[in-house]
Image (cartoon, rainbow, N blue to C red; front, side, top):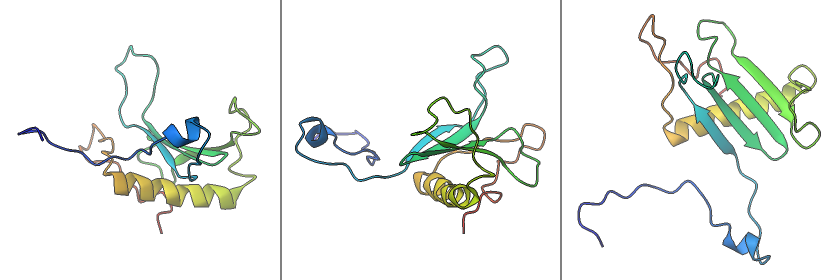
Length: 131
């Protein structure tokens, strides 16, 4: 092996058997994590974390740092790939499930959370249902 190389844990899975038609891939959470803004004149991407699990996608926007409840959007990607029909009120049990999975996935990945510039305090996962 190479001397001085640091090896990082893999979070991915080998898709080769699936692509060859000789295997399957277990359904597992896919995490998207963008904890910072891309500058005042950037492409307009605000800080967020999102989770895709099966057909469902939950997005947690980090812009409401001081609010009592997080700004979350839930979509059924199989039925609404354009993310027009926000389903949090229609599917509260699914939202709660994905909130828990999102918080657990962020914790287990050691994801860095954004810091509130005014206070210097990192955003807390507490508003998410991580029980």
